[in-house]
Length: 208
Ligand SMILES: NC(=O)c1ccc[n+]([C@@H]2O[C@H](COP(=O)([O-])OP(=O)(O)OC[C@H]3O[C@@H](n4cnc5c(N)ncnc54)[C@H](O)[C@@H]3O)[C@@H](O)[C@H]2O)c1
Image (cartoon, rainbow, N blue to C red; front, side, top):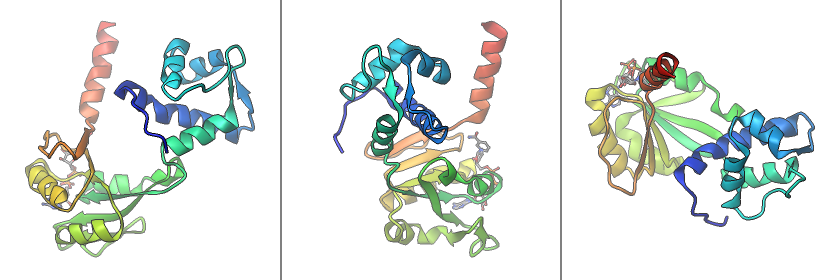
């Protein structure tokens, strides 16, 4: 697949475009105008045009977008034509909720292995996913071709576990803990903070 140099803000909108073209495809729609697309995904058409321009000529001026080729394009771009195996460390409240959420229903993402250090949890299955000892993380990451790991351990364990993951060769960490973990630059970390999101939402409601 061609490597494109695109801004982060554009990259973050790609799953949104992909999901919408998938929806149109599932609804047997063959074409969509740029105005309709802008309304549906709530991104203005100039931004959409700029986003799409990084990938060459997607869509025709004054005609809109043909659903099937657009969907195929985004599927390839986002590796939706192959499944990504993901791991999860920390099978507590949040870990269980994430394991019980069926990611692969909307994306080709599958949590294939979970890890914990609590002997009472190790060996259990959650929604068909086996919980391994954290000591097995290196072997399992290699064996199951896992590049990305979700981190849902208590804050005190976040850095030591992140260090273990780095040693194990992880490429990306989706960090749910409030700690901003340190990793070498080659390992990409994305932080998810629901409290932050809620606070921002409430701020906007109160101030805008
Ligand atoms: N980002 C968010 O929006 C959000 C929301 C809720 C919770 N959190 C964070 O997620 C994390 C987990 O929260 P929770 O309520 O599920 O906690 P929890 O205590 O229920 O679960 C933590 C799990 O991690 C395991 N664990 C602890 N140390 C470990 C280690 N060294 N190796 C492997 N496993 C280990 C524990 O045995 C436990 O099963 C916390 O850091 C919390 O602050 C984030």
